[in-house]
Length: 479
Image 1 (tube, helix red, strand yellow):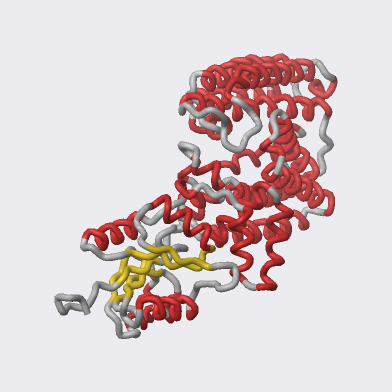
Image 2: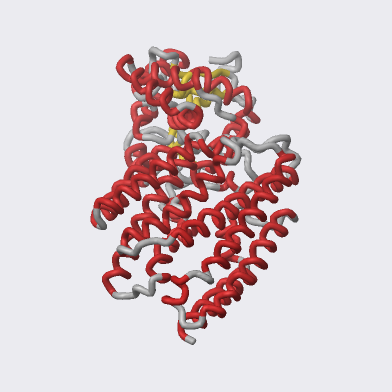
């Protein structure tokens, strides 16, 4: 009792993962370590044999998470601020490792005490309940949590506060017989999950139809096999996009646009992202196997290359652009394998140079954005700001070479066999010459989306150029 005879105000005990933070520090630290050293991340899992707290300690020591950019729950922060205004004390009590909890508490500056796991004791569930009772006494604290593991904590609290709890969890808390407050509601919004798949990027997989179209092989069986290849590539690519986002959390949160991606923003839990990556890959593998062993091998090569890109190559100057060009070209190779069409060296040469140009434009756009934002160096890339002129030259040079390859192809015997009016195809060269020059110029001005394919779909002039290319191709084939 206080000197006035009134009972002291309970301490507000706040959980971290899923409560104050719209993420989980175990997953944050694992993917942070994996982004820099995949083998080290896998080795830390061995710490589970000595307990989950040991795993958290190992990851926390190896990780370098930018706590200032983590997705905090604004409503919980408001609740804490209101509590402090009444003179109440606030403690962060979390199963996250003590070192990570200390960093977060220092950044926020709203806690009077911080208690986390210590490498031996995992401060969760019954262990957390026992700790709080020992520290503050029965009903000596108000506890804010979000998980069913907190059901053993709330009965000992003066008040239970749930965060984004489902109706099921709310019902269980109500039956505990304690006073309850609710912060937020459990949202069943699938849009962030769909966004995490990046369906707009599936446009790139239309390249699997190129061999079929160029060979004029438009029978139902070929179309069905090409469509299956498209779906397999899209699902496998989405698996890689999810993996890439998990590995790029720090870099994405430091980016003006990418910070809104679902995992970086906390709108999709990182744990569910891990499951998504595996599930999408599994379905893509089944569809690939249905198209035969050769196609499966091509798809496996694509996955290995994209994973290597996410883990290593994207942080290496020039080789990152080369790998991206190879991945685009591999889609065309997969399309040829799926429908049984032999690919000409002309097509492969054009693809390598053309997609190298687009990949260079992507890097140029990132550097221009970085310069405009006043940043010294891009996050997670192997470039410096003063490389931007070289990158733009690379984009223009390889783009023009791709058009030269196309022009040489139009004088080849293959064109005479496939097209009745080859001179009409020269219009395609003129359109591409204009389009490549324009996107490099727009990128230089800072008007380019960080992905030129997405930009082309949204840009009406690019769409007009695309229709004109199709028109010249039709003229060459039928007239």
